[in-house]
Length: 50
Image (cartoon, helix red, strand yellow):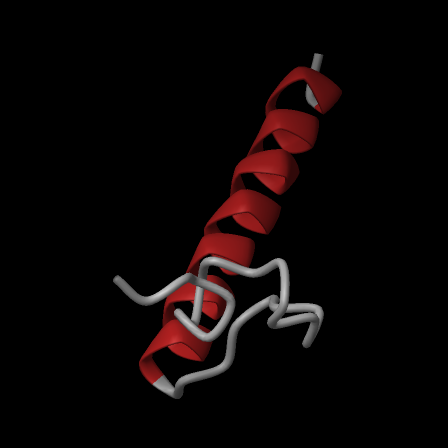
């Protein structure tokens, strides 16, 4: 019975922490880019100029 409360609470906690870290990383300019800018549209380096 108690596990029905604890397990979802832990899952919610982990999701909140992950979102918080992602937001913090974006504010600091850190991305999940794999550094393959030739095929990446995130930084704009891989996009063709018109």
